[in-house]
Image 1 (cartoon, one colour):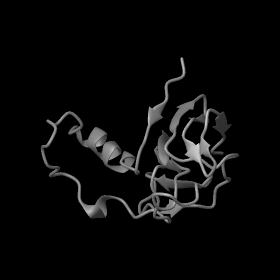
Image 2 (cartoon, one colour):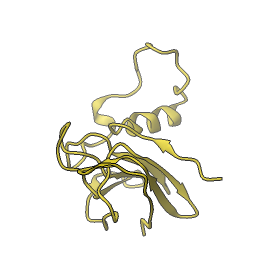
Image 3 (cartoon, rainbow, N blue to C red):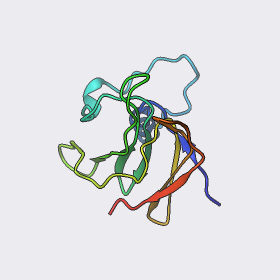
Image 4 (cartoon, rainbow, N blue to C red):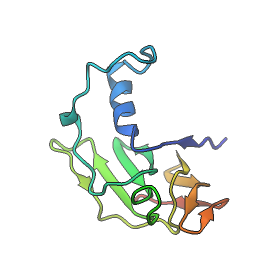
Length: 132
């Protein structure tokens, strides 16, 4: 079974920290006490609508859009949580199609990206990406 999870606005960074600290199930509206701005570095780009997956303790931030009505990206950034001082690496191969606000999942070492939109409108396509 292939299950897609929609990641919007890089909230994956907070989600990942919540999972590691056991605070994921806190009641809605309860303020976060355990995560500060210094817990992870800023990404190399300011964007909206990327999707994210956890790949071998690395966060892959995929696609996205510049501003609200800007250009969609096919870029991929990686944050290696195994590094002592993790930094975002954008020197990775790109996806085949620019897309924003899409679902992604990891299966058998490949990242699958489906749906979303690009500069021309909504997408029904699905593609696989090899992070190696």
